Length: 51
Image (cartoon, rainbow, N blue to C red):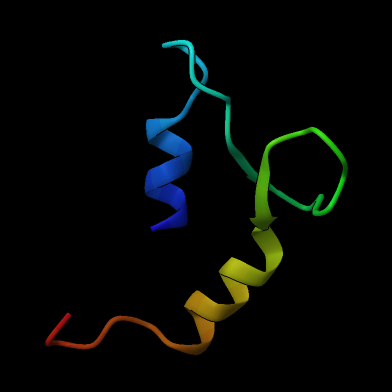
C-alpha cells in the first residue's frame, strides 16, 4: 500500500511528492517510511500461494 501511495502521489499533479526512503520525522518533507524496514518486512513474510 505504501508503495502504491508513493507512485500515485509523485508530485506531478499538484499533490505532494510522497517518497519512501530512510528519513522519518524530518519536518515538512513528505516521507512515508523507512525503505529498509519495508524491505525487511517483505523478506520476512513473502507472498504465499493465496496472495
